[in-house]
Length: 291
Image 1 (cartoon, rainbow, N blue to C red):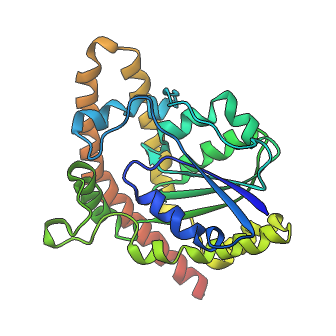
Image 2 (cartoon, rainbow, N blue to C red):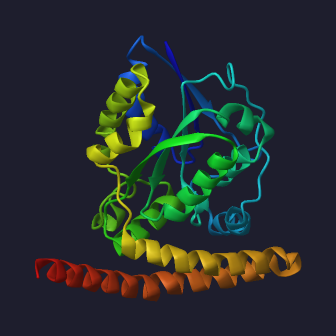
């Protein structure tokens, strides 16, 4: 029997739904033992968020400062055939519970020498968070075998509106009766089982070195070049703000409110311009390829 350990933090429940669908072909099979390890913050994060609570996690998320987690245990650490680490990006960084896990002494016992698969549920910007998780996994001695990303397929500006609606109301329905439901679609979640079938087949035959290539053929999310450029610029700005805020605790709330205003302006102005430039770049690239 192949042993799989699934480590995750799911604030809204969406990521857990993705994992359940993805792993159903494995949990339904006697050939696999699937153990779930849910990371629980010592002080739970609310859902839906309030504006102040959403802003409060910004500096520590960007600077990747670990938080306290509730005590947890896992059976036979270091003896799993596959470790799956599932996470969401917070401010272009891994969520704080996942950051805390990756910096814990227990993480090395689990990750060192293990085949690892990462699973991401995101709006649409996930590359910088994935890069940080990948780096930490490598430092812990893990072998990253693949990455599965499920994203909100709505246009960038539409998803900004719908994700804010979801975050601050807790409602995952049609926003204002006009916009599509926020987050990863039910259809994409339901279809995630195809990845589980591929994982099971390769795991049974000890061919995990072929996992990344197999997942690519199944259609894991490609990197959006336009959004990746925007992420690079935004990450630098986030670092500046996060450092400034943590160094001035007496005016932390004031600085967080100023940052929030800048974030709204960036979403309203910079993001549309970036989308337009990305569209023009893609059109130019297509015409160039024709000739």
